[in-house]
Length: 433
Image (tube, rainbow, N blue to C red; front, side):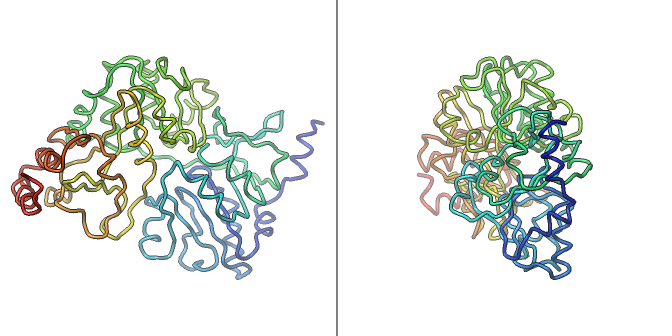
């Protein structure tokens, strides 16, 4: 019998047996989203419900359902720390039931070096004949955290696609394994609105042939993807691989031939989308998932000419300070990789970064371009780093402009209903001279 199969059987446990190894006060971490081990976390929660453990923390970038560590009745027993707050965990963070970590995505692994980590657990593919599991759809911070943790527990799911890159773990590195077959979390495609389509076309006009792209999920990124059919030889180097990128690769618009780094490969830190996308990624030699410490490193990004980064914002002030993660003092998401890619584009020859958003919120009653950010709002991207800002009313470049020039430029792409008020406020602050 294959020696690795023997070792696998020796380490194979039930989720309950793995949960029994968890002690009060332990710090646990899983990779983002689809890598969250459902059976293991539920078994740990069962122990917490029975008052067998307390003070256990679960850390991850993004949580998905089911997420028992978010249950109010487990507060103080099995709690969550979010490193990028999204819909599943948002209410818990906003109500103070869960903690959150301010960080740039590129720094996740380095931040963990100064923290204690008892347990790393993750979903993986089935083991191959050489004793290797793949982390599948997520590379991100997996290997670094696994190497730091005292214990490594894996949950084998045959539905996890095997994706190439730096995302392998060998059976010899694992303390225990359990098995669970379940559907992977998917992200429904976001419809493109008329406003998204206008913004997408404005950004697409700025993207040259041979450029390398980073963008995420949402109506505006989807709109950009749909506006690139006349482009050639594009590349992808992004923290998140999305369905719209699949379409660009299938059309041959993205071929990665002109990238200085990882030529002929689309590179990402993780992938999240539809079942169709997961099938496309499996055993696809044109895709590589790499650690986010590499993918999002501004110096990595800066080595790629004509890098184009597209990110969103909740609001921006007339100096160019961007808030993408809170509504006043209320946490809404996280910094993610926005600052990483904006700074990387500033280092890239021919690079451009775009902060894109609709001009208004709440059915046109609130301007997202404001005299000052909402009090308490977190600054995600500094005024000194921001490059282009785009709304449905135009695309302006702030980089290299004076405070007065910036204010005028931003007011010009605000909704017309708010331009007079913004101009008056700018004059009061001596920003328009």
